[in-house]
Length: 389
Ligand code: FES
Ligand SMILES: [Fe+2]
Image (cartoon, rainbow, N blue to C red; front, side, top):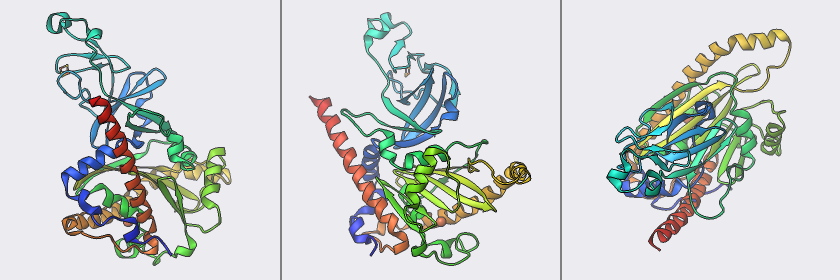
């Protein structure tokens, strides 16, 4: 028997979909969990930076030599955002009054500091709010700082770490797309876990051949996260993780990994033995608004077979990419329509859902989500206690 909706969900689970206060609290708590922010390729050179959103708060990540540092994107002086573009290169200098910061976020160059503040820049002790940064392959993750020993990214991702590390190294620049989803981020995530809607919502693509057979699928749960693999071979997920770690992994079937809070990596066959990857992110903006971003690229595995097949794959990759983009857009549009439909009645949801066997991972997601929020509440409480003592 799979997980029941009324076991996984609280009665008031949908409050954060409509209530700004509940949403803000949820986001404040989830910011303590490792969250995907962007790609190392955007901070390849010394001084490169990119702006991102961590649990709705504007942050930026910057390279200083071999180190990646992250800060909330708010000047310590009078709160102007330090980074007003999506990416760039250069020192941290605020455009409001030209305060300058070093790699630790300390204000080290304050114009006319002695005259205006009665001391020298360093003595004022003003600094940016740092965030913790870690990487997995080309993926950059961040989280709010908290006292005490905390789970490193590798432990948080568990057996998913080698898979993400292996599959997140595209051979060519990914095709990127983004759009505003007029629905809560959790609705976007839920539909990505839902293997029951394909016939009704994607009749010309995923649902064309009818309903999936749960007996032929593997659902793997690892830490807060989960995966679907379109194979029922025992240990298929564990084997995939080991093969990715030693570099021998070669895809043979569809799989999708959902990493909490809102990162998704799908691996799917396009034609013949060719597979593509799709990274997706559902970045929360407001209770009823989400920034959806996706990146598509050929699966980073060596082409096998005779030289002619390898050459053909190389030549056809750009065309394949356009084709994949076209179909991905269609599938995403179909999913968005459903999410936005549910959002219009979210204020009327006052009980848990019924969960089909093919929706079991939605229940897992809700359980892990509640756990992450509860952990965040502890960090938040400790932080408030430290601040008041
Ligand atoms: S607000 Fe940044 S220098 Fe004044
Ligand atoms: Fe879908």
